[in-house]
Image (tube, rainbow, N blue to C red; front, side, top):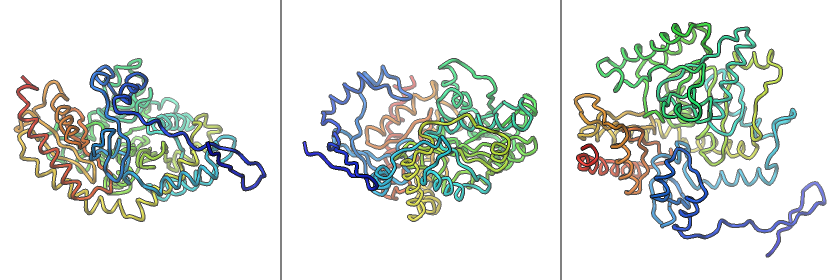
Length: 479
């Protein structure tokens, strides 16, 4: 084996390093057998997966994936809502390599910092809505929302109101899968696992007009849905409520787009009671809605904003909590030590990649492209499916879109059990080599921001054929 000699710039130390060890070259059946034997997947029925075997993804470019069989697959979900700039961006690999050669890692503990970490904090303060001047870095959206919980409760304790511990979220809101983040989420299936309900987290109904207010105008329903927050505050007691958290658009909950006026009324209610407003931008951020952040799309002015996913386009694990002056001033001036953090908080390599990712979004005009071109085109194409017998509603903003499947177009006639029809339609899309997610019986799309109109045509045409086949299969699915 030929060794490589690596010499430090500032010392005479020379290190001998072998070439990197490649991942073994195995057959697809070998990979599947090893996966079943050793790998526990997230959000997965492992018994079913073992019986069916998983698909092994081996490479990617642009909006396309290739599996171990050589099949090309259109990624209509940008990985998991995150690969905003698309796959195969050499600039991001180079940014990681440069930083790893210079300083691969150092902690942000011990009163230290690294240049990429500081620069990313400054860049995010410039990009996010006015007043969000400080960044606390974590490694995932779940960790970012856990951090927000601790910050909010610490803030109120420092402000002399320690009874303010309750955080209100929404049904079908998703804020992560760690213990507190899952409790803050409104996903009932998650609450049934891992220890049951956690105190001081409450939920109001989500602003899903198709389900919760079909007989009201959008504007009237916006007022009704926001009013559920006022009712909850009064029931809990205004002196106990610390914060309200919401995604600008609820993605994992079924692509729920808020009606006109909803966020303005939520903002007014929070301000009236002095309650902190947290915008969970983990899914909506970095161009997904046609603006840098969903908060700008809906004119939300949060006290705290959580970021992840598109921050690095999924190339490195990194997330952030953006903190407004109201909270930051109290934490800094009155808080003493904030006893919270992670080994990889502000990881310099992840921050370097995130900086380059933001630069790509900026210099290629991808945010504007979503707002002015491919976002409207995706919605135009999907609206063409509105007349399909299974389609109850098409909704979305930017490159976030959902097609709700219904049993009866005359009203929100849901399928029972929920999810069986949507899962079948999803599987048909997968077999046709397009990844479209099923959330219950809503077909959800969030492709990379670089997707072309021709690729959107492929995605929507695949869904159209899957809907036709699903309609033919209904007698077997729903006897």
